[in-house]
Image 1: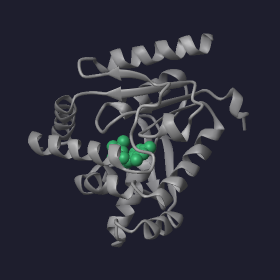
Image 2: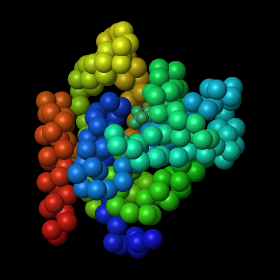
Image 3: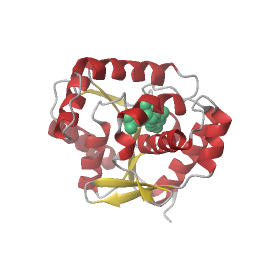
Image 4: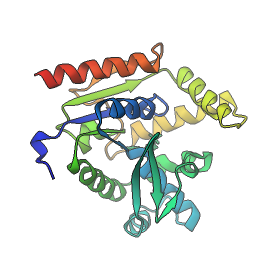
Length: 228
Ligand code: DC
């Protein structure tokens, strides 16, 4: 294991559908870093809670369920696979039922502190690109590069719309817009580690930028920080 001082950490935070995971995966691949999608961990717990009938408004019960849940983020060619209790749930945790309830599940302090503990352990083994809502503010406060990605609600809804269409679904743009705005509100207004830009994060508005442009800017920032 390398010492924490020598590890290079990139924290990418921002609201739902701002392009964090797409960009983070590419940046990690370019740099040979490990990509860690923390949203997938909260989604995994939400999936298991829905499946087991656990009350998603009961923090202590959710924490108990999390203690019994093995979540593995496995490196794959296209980013990562999410394995819960030995089962590949990578696709399942992206479905609408999980998306609709994940903000509520992630709002509990006891759930968050266990997740943060697991996320920090994942970051102990090498250079990482980690994306989420509280990475720069809370999980990796000493990250050398902190990026806060944002985009208008309209743009984010259109991106999700196109993603869902590609999967053969028939999404409603209005419904997606409403769901994104609601998730923003819940993530920003929760009392424990709300979604907020870290003071030392660089804000990138991706509304009119391509994925390549966003990746290029982040790689440039990394290059400058590494040269320091
Ligand atoms: O990035 P995502 O959409 O997969 O995240 C799903 C939810 O998980 C998001 O609405 C809020 C929560 N989350 C969080 O609270 N903290 C994180 N570090 C990552 C995600």
